[in-house]
Structures are given as C-alpha cells and as structure tokens.
Amino acid sequence: MITKLDLRESLNIVNSETTTETETFQNQTMRPILKLQNDLYLSMFINYALRQKADFSSLSVSKKQMFIEQNIQKDAVLKNTFIGMTIGMFTLEELKLYQSESKIFNKRIITMLIERLKSQIGKE
Image (tube, rainbow, N blue to C red):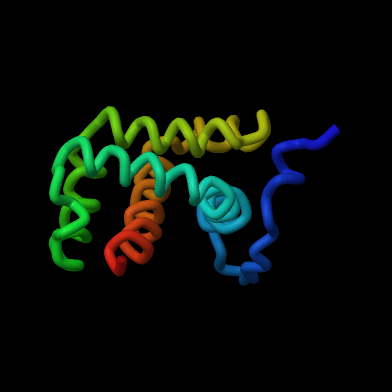
C-alpha cells in the first residue's frame, strides 16, 4: 500500500545542530508537501485570481505578485483552503506535531506558498 510519505520527494535539506524542531518539520514535511501539491495550488490560485480580477493575466509582474500576497493574506477562505490542502497530506504523527504549534506552522505554510506562487505566476 502506498502511503502519503511515499508520494513525497525527499528534498535532502541538511539540518544542523542548531536546527529547531519547527524548522525540521518545515523542511522535512511542509516543503515536500508544497512541492507535491504545487500544480494544485497553482490551478486553485489562477482560478481564484481570474474570478476576482478578470484582467489578472494582463497585470504587470509586480502587480501580480502584490495581488498574490494581498489576497492570500486577506481572503480567509482562500488561505484556509491552502492550509487544508497542506494539512490533508500530513500523517497522523505529523498532524499531532502540527497541532502543537498550528499558528506558527500556518504562518510558515502561507509564507512559503506565497513565495512559491509569486515565483511561478508572477513571471508569466
């Protein structure tokens, strides 16, 4: 049987002695999930952007990037959808760790997702 962990690519991010448990979780769990779910995040956001702003594709790079950041930060439904898409890929053990610091992890998920989307959508 294939597990959620089997779907994720190992990113080989080296942890040092000073790496915190939060950073380790970010690098070993959240980053591989964001990479795995990338096409879904992109599709969801582009669909959202076109529904919100019909001329999204004609915006300048800087305006697209500003739109990405502002809308993910301010639209609670969109933000929570992306967080849910990420959490849905956690194992039960990972979920327990996430729940202990969910506010911190949610902020990290959103920050990484915004950067990921800006680097892909903003340069089209």
